[in-house]
Image 1 (tube, helix red, strand yellow):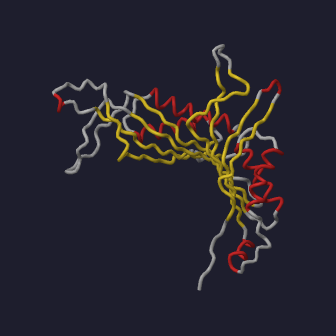
Image 2 (cartoon, one colour):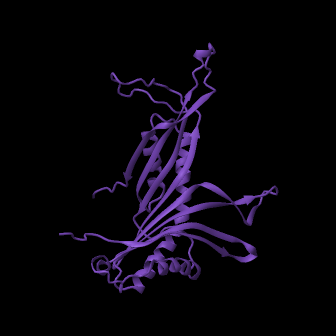
Image 3 (cartoon, one colour):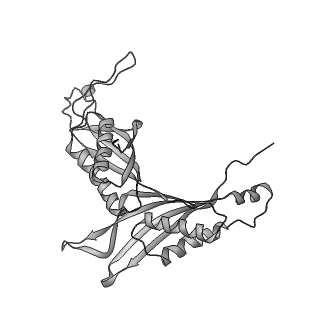
Length: 287
């Protein structure tokens, strides 16, 4: 006996470039790929009997992504994801849930030699803005924002000392080391009344402030301080998850050449690397 216990289906890798054209050729761009997945008990029939009468074709879903992108006004992809989920729930009564997952390329306005940011010319940044919006019938949407591939490094003000040692430990303690990492993070909200773009920029500011302005005794401590700073400065953020791989760069071994190592030349090591993760939640005082 076989039983279908869960199902969802949809369209993935839908590439969209949406340009909002304001006055004086001042443009705002959203460059993203989108995945839409639908859930519903009535979809089980296509799995169990091949009855497709309730199946919304994934081609229809793809077209809907483009139609809503053109039809609706939105200031962030979080808002767009809410609109898209609302459309599918309103249009198809047998759909119980919609998950919209997007990854947005970041385009920064080009600043020319006159010091002015250009209205319709852009340069792409490295980091990715991630968004997941989960919409369910008769419930408020759940929005998760995030950032991927934010590469940062500092060349001092980081150490690692006092860690447990045993027979298998070869790592030396240090008060001064290279600290490089690729920030991957996501955060959830306790309200839908949010300026999502402003929160995204504040998250990056918290990363930069903590990373650059505090001495790091461990990647774990830095991770916690970043999340704590975000939660303290953005009351709409309920929870933060961070993943910080330790991108090692060790001092080159000049001893084999009878040359003194003055700690200015390093050898980056891609693999293996440390990986530090943590989830930090807002504390609510009990009255």
